[in-house]
Image: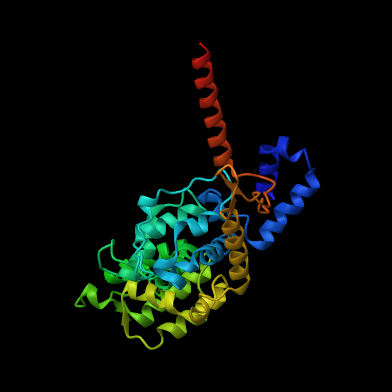
Length: 340
């Protein structure tokens, strides 16, 4: 509601043309549909669990053709979907692998910035590390591997920060779950020391790691994976590493279903509704380039241009408005100088 009011005040001159009631109707319809996060600043995109789910679902629906069609997918195919006035990345930054759906972390980051211009590279790199482990960060990743790893890293980012601290404590021989011993005269906390003869490559004891995670989930104010699913996931493991745990989270379909943003991996490239919309869009774009017969004067008579239907949102992201204002001021300065 705070964002809706802020958008209303920021765009009050434009909104006054069609009324406040219509603005709020369209705004909250976009919230319900999950499109309200498009082209917004990162602080807004990650502000609530609903916003995060909406962003994940939008990223999947927009770019699943990367995995479905591999090198047949071209940036211009999707750019035609963007609203006017939005920044577009250079084609040099989108050097697609023409033989598969494999892209680098930098290329996936470019895709994320198409939806959220200030999306932090750090989050993309963290998601890539889940897939690549210790491999170089410029290695190629499939769309499905990156998407499910990104889902875990983006949606549970605060939880994973705490898990990383717990894992380091366990590696150092500390138990993050302190135990108060009632018979102790000093009343100090005692910690159960872990054996230090294990290599960090061996990871930590899975059962103790889960106990710490369960305690974390009970007291955390941020989103956490369901404890029962995490327990089931770790039940067959004796020891595990931090990135092994993250990879297990990313691959667990039960956690994916509980989160509710993405379909199962087997259905990742199925979206009939979006396919139908894209087919209509391609037909419209193709129709614009059709030329008619040559006229008697020798000039090519082009068919009348068909205006494709476009639904403009009742508001524009604040950073785009600021950019447009800055460009307008710059153009005025050039005009003034030319007149002088």
